[in-house]
Image 1 (tube, rainbow over the protein chains, first blue to last red):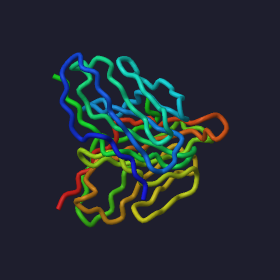
Image 2: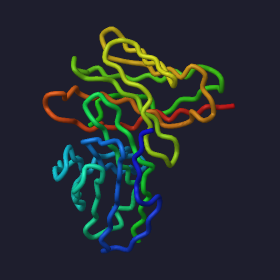
Image 3: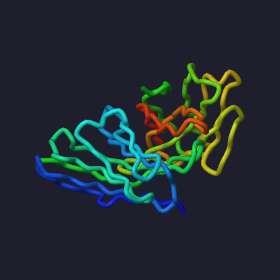
Image 4: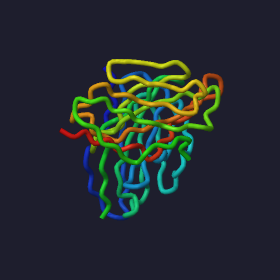
Length: 112
Length: 114
């Protein structure tokens, strides 16, 4: 069975802290994605990666960076968390075009 | 920007078929239609996808019009657990040019009522 896991379901951090959100998939997929979801705005793409050490900016990359050192793991980094980064963060992966995109359960981040 | 238009909300009686429409009038010949749903506080879940022909799986059926400018997702016997936001997405075939992430719109909030 397909599995995308995220390191935390809920996270509370303080403004200015460095935050790491981890995503792991066990399907040997090349492509991985980070989205954030906010009420009224839907899912917005932050970054994606189509191979190890490769990354592409999505629609809203500002304030974020990513790391893809291994195929199965894609990390989202908030260098200096701000309150406007309070959101639900969703990781996803897929193997090839026309394959389905599988999502993790999400991490609900609160920045105080 | 999302290339699809969906009604913001719909109600459906439990046990009845839920028919969720989607307009994608600018769809290109190499774009697929995907449907996902998101149950509250969970990640989106894949339902079905298709290019031209109607598709059916254990979850739903997808009816695509002949001109491909619209489609309908059908949940044949809706249950309370089908209450969710349903997203219709078009995605290009990028077999030769890399991969394109899914672009989600606002979706349709389906409420299944007992």
